[in-house]
Image (cartoon, rainbow, N blue to C red):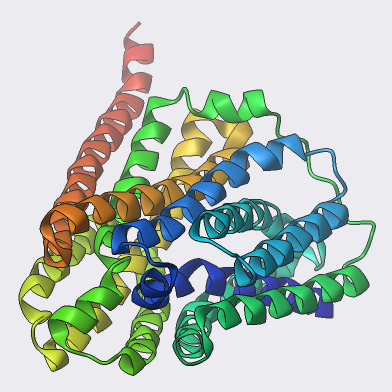
Length: 400
């Protein structure tokens, strides 16, 4: 594998770290900035909203740019956004910095797979994409807990400075190693992206993605406050617990992918959503015991991110049937749907915390997941009806 691919992997690691590290630092940042927990939670919501906007919209608007130029521009914006967060003089300026960084995140993952496959032979394309996305998984396992530890001991600003440094190394590596003559993919116009949104079946899948992924973030955004104020953990333990969560996420990703291949994405999602809702309900009771809480979080991570492979696989299959000329666009919009779910989940969780306290969030998160489960049953029934109609079509043609 070419060295340029590892520059992309480092970029993915830095981006993954900066997205989720806020969760472990939320109480620290709220106290330091003099804002409430729900207000600090907006740092998660608005970042995710930036990703959701950046993925489809900015990718379409920059479609004619050369891939390397766009990659370097995106990573420059990422570095500047984190430097701005490091030096942010106020909460409002930190909000702007997070939103800008989110825009960079959205575009990076929209073009990253195309660039990665352009660096290798066709028979190594899947491996190249897997290596790049390893950066995101490793960020959850190591980057987030380390960033949380650094932020708690040296100030949360230091975490953003270190992430900016990682981004700068990745930027320099990309500038030196990524070739200038990367294949330019067909330009996905904004109108072609919007046409995907006219397909009811795809809209239903996007709703499942937003609910099924976002339901977790109603509670996950406020995990650190729960662990400190309810479970009784000290601030120093949060980084270690985030490490436990990250390991379970990595396992869940693999497990969820294998389940989707074996059972089909719809059946896999049914199992995962039932398990996830059950875990969130259980957390209402186990959060009061340190050992039970950590065990619940270990299981929670596997279910929370186990749905990602099934959702991505399913949206591609639906797009191939209903929007075959825009499969890549449909897949990219599902990335946006993940982040719409994060944004709405974090934002909704903030309102719940303000009104009813942190321990109401697991109940509400479970209800949101059950909404995703209902939508999954509906789309499964629509698949069965479509299969029956397809099977009967030749019979009607013969009869006529």
